[in-house]
Image (cartoon, rainbow, N blue to C red; front, side):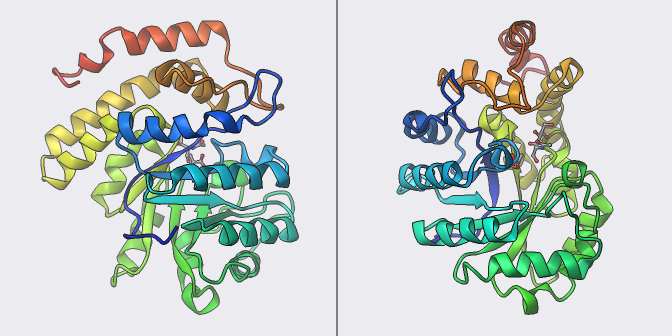
Length: 311
Ligand SMILES: CC(=O)N[C@H](C=O)[C@@H](O)[C@H](O)[C@H](O)CO
Ligand SMILES: CC(=O)C(=O)O
């Protein structure tokens, strides 16, 4: 899938559909793609990442999923980014070669997080060895220090990165350190790289300092509303953009207080889209009936209309 345009706007971090007995369920991916495009107006996806439980899947499962997403996304999606990060370098390299072979429009890699890189050079060396296995595929670094514990600042990592990783294209930035993000954007004067923000509840703040778009779990079901925020922001209507951020934030604040993670995202996506996403895989456990009832009631309660008449 040759990217027709530079990645921008919303990217849905897809969940991995599973059968009730915990096998990956490829059979609903076609329907999932159609849902994102037609109901959420989201045409980019990020596969096998945090939300997709990528690190809880076998290499074989990750390849099968990547293939199915690319196959179903053909002619419907603009970008299919495959997360190929893994704890072992050979595992990550194998996934990178596979993603290249099937025509993914980009690959992303998180920092290895059991044995952790302790310096920029160590992290860069690992990323370089993965990226070089897919020499024609745009490469994104996936920065998510709350989960990896690798806190090397992106500003530092980006310094001279093109010489080491010629395919380097940008960052999925899933951290609240907006100073780091701002420094990256400020130094990226030529607008060579793409910065996709990954903390959905504060995307507007990241847009304000220059993020190009966002990758997140909530764009699976709040994509339409978040697109309205992007549009208001692009039209310099900050007051309206803020209303949309408050609107999505109201729902997220509600579910975060109940306990919100990948399992809960799968449950919400199941009732919003009607597509059975199934349970998560251990060590995650499925969302409680109580959570589902409350989240559903919140969404059904006219929540969409509760902030100054927005829908
Ligand atoms: C830790 C995590 O999963 N972060 C996601 C992406 O990076 C986000 O999309 C969050 O799910 C979202 O911001 C809700 O907190
Ligand atoms: C949220 C995100 O980007 C991920 O699931 O990896």
